[in-house]
Image (cartoon, rainbow, N blue to C red; front, side, top):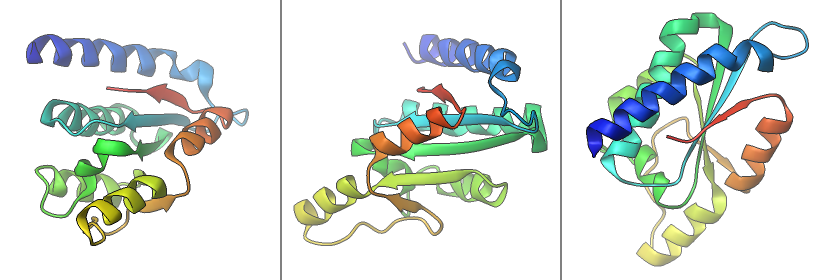
Length: 144
């Protein structure tokens, strides 16, 4: 099952990268990729990190990547998580990680304390609205 999902993710990412010239900004300067994660399982987290890394590797400076996180997907950006080092490296390369404020508030209430997030995670009022805004701004949408 995991191998099938990884293969499907590679096919989808390849399609996004091939089609992305058609979705470049009107100035034609950079590709724009919005990655959506709302699940906490390791496979989805790995696919998210791998998709962002591969897009950067292929397109280098010609891509802007924003990862939008809400619900259980918040596990990706919690300190001590399995992919903490990779996330930090992606941030250093300019990948932005946006976390839904509603999710943070719900988890704070549930656990009695605020989650320990990775440094550099941007809190947005609504993950859904952030995804809409990115797509309206010409971003290609990808959900691993």
